[in-house]
Image (cartoon, rainbow, N blue to C red):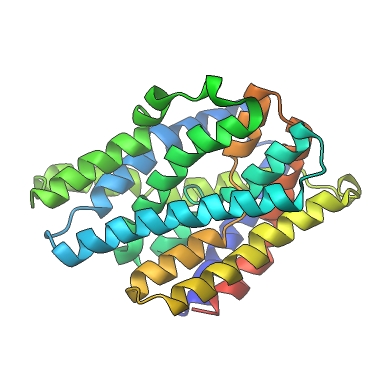
Length: 296
């Protein structure tokens, strides 16, 4: 099965999620509950399970390279957005910078990587670690300065904890008992269908009339086209392992992450713009992600 076909299958599940939202099978309360299950249960299980592999120094080095380059690319995207949108009001500029810097590398990125090549998941975990650290430090500071930065919140994030456990088991070359592994596989396997259904609930409420502001289109173009192509150029110029290069490119090509809307709500950003911009980029990604995947 081709990469494009795998991606299209996932997005059919997104459309099913949108239909379920339209039919009120997904209520606001249901969406919140399922989101918490994915963040706190299925994603951590998936992370640990996919890091269960024999120790390899090459993989460890590539993991570190992915972590470092992910941070560089995110920070560069934020800086570019701050320059591009420098004349916008502070509340809007902070949202635009976060939209550019942070993709939906968990909810949407993990399922895409699993569909393309499950062996790349260990590098997707590295990308997600960089995402978590930067979004709760630099990302928060864009809204309200340094006073709301919480290293404790970063370190207690379930996905950071699960990544640390996975890395420790990998480095110690420890394989979990078969029953534990099967449980992690079964629960972690729920991540892909649940995540894609949740994405569908987000795109369901998109109305064309809401997007007359040019900033919606500029931020979506930056997130979905410009930044992925720049990253693709960079990884092709660097002497990287193909798995690392492909993971960096695909996760950069994901739509804007939902964390931006949450932080805009918490720290006084333009929350309405943030929510609509995320929904808009997610809807457009139904087209751009399959197209981008053809460039691999």
